[in-house]
Amino acid sequence: MLFQKQQTIANRYTVVFPHKEGSYAETYRVRDENGKLRFLKLIYYSKLLSPQYNEDGKIIEVEVAKFLDHPNVCKYVDSGKLISNGQQLAYIVTEFVSGETLDKRIIRDGDLNVYEIKQIVKGVLSALQFLHSLPTPIIHNEISIQNLMLDLAGGLENLKLIDFGHARFLDQEPTSLNLKEINPFYLAPERLNGVCCVQSDLYAVGVVLYQLLFGSLPWFFDVSKMNGQQIVERLQAERVRPIRIPYIEKFELDEQLLNIVNKATQNEVQNRFQTAQEMLDAIEGKIKVETVIRRKTSLGKTETNKTIKRGNGFSDVAGMAELKEQLRSDVINLLQNPEQAEALGLSIPNGLLFYGPPGCGKTFFAEKFAEETGFNYLYVKGSDVASPYIDGGKGKIADIFSQARENAPTILFLDEVDAIIRNRSEHNNVTTAGAVNQFLMELNNCGKDKVLVIGATNKPMDIDEAALRAGRLELKYYIPQPDKETRKEIFQINITKRRYDFGIDYDQLADRTENYISADIALIVDTAARLAFRRNVGKITMALLEEAITNTKPSLGIEQIKAYEAIRDRFEQTEKHQQQRTPIGFKK
Image (cartoon, rainbow, N blue to C red; front, top):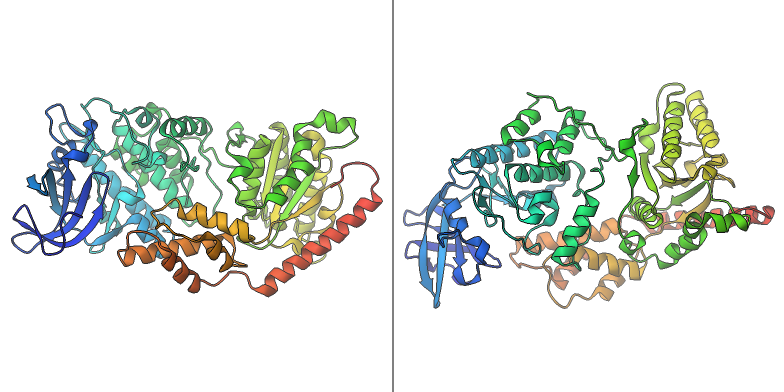
């Protein structure tokens, strides 16, 4: 940082706290001549690129800042130039906001409820309505949860849209992007070509809304080893398929809000909201959005639910080399070479069961399995199929299998499958028995219809035994807590996405986290990041990771692990017995 505490910038602003150093600028908390706290951004002319200047040679970000005068942006106070350390610099001064960015709030306190999410989105849209309604509209171009500042002195709707480093006036020429400096997953399709418009910002708001509701970015993939062109090509390929809306239980999450997400993130500009006010009216319920919801799965028979899994397959899965190879040889090669298998008297299996402790990645592994096969993919959560009405569950199960057959070849993934096929000996009622019988009937010979069912469960002993017999969920795969090599890879995946110190000893981290699950390791890295932020370290260090491990207990106890391993051993013995009695057909 060029200036330290108590030093003066431009003879007017005294540094209270050096905040952050970026690729072309530094930011400071300062006091002005009247003792008021301000926020100062110091820009190096020597580090700017040509697209950051307008046709008159002025810095676009400085010119944009002069128009900032709205409750949902940090208001402009001053700007100017100075020479220091033999360099020419520009500075922007805005009001100071005591708060934290939205991403830091989520890390600290966890997920937001739907009411809170709506308040945040309304604040962003209010800022955009102001920016887009100026005589020459300003396009922010970098809306993300990292650029939303929550004001601790006010409610969520009083947030500030910050960081106008990529902002442009609408009448300026298109410009190339550096995708290593801006998060590509918030960018509208036209932004990938350097073009921006009012609807580009609204697309980004749709992505933020999706992220806040579901805890992830749509169409996300690892970009760490990709260049800009590869990122663009992969994004374009991913966005050909509809956005996936997961089934989750969230109070006040209704069809209107899901329709808003879907409309805001359309690829074609004309199919999105055309103004921030229109999207704001939709959030407030003043207008109804009639967009068709393209869910990740559905119990109806709509073509919009047909999803081909694209991605890197098993290469995205840390470790588990033996399990991945076993699935390739047992199942995937058979699925991809059906004629050769048929000539040998082998048939496509009807179903697989992924079981094991919670938090070990069964759902993620199933998605990557689907990507590896290249088949269509349907996701269903078991609790969504259960019905309190007689024959209600049967109808839902029949619809699911009907859709899977229509879209074959299909991987039908049933998460929480124990909720669908509960053990009838322990749940002796008409509703449960009817649903289980329907499931068994649909499962019989579904492999011949090119439908492979994958069930996932944390409670394998709650599943009706009839569903686990040969010809049904016949192949069972234990998804264990990660071993040492897997833990190393999980640490690397989580750490390398962030700023970190050299000298991270991944072997030592793996040694210290025996019996920790994937979710535990992600929490450790998040905790270390929070410690780095609170202590103003600026990066994740080995010492912080070790401190986080000390303060994070594994989710699974030794007794729980032993219990799951006992179930695994019981399944393996049963399967060996079945194979001895079955001389022909598919064998593991």
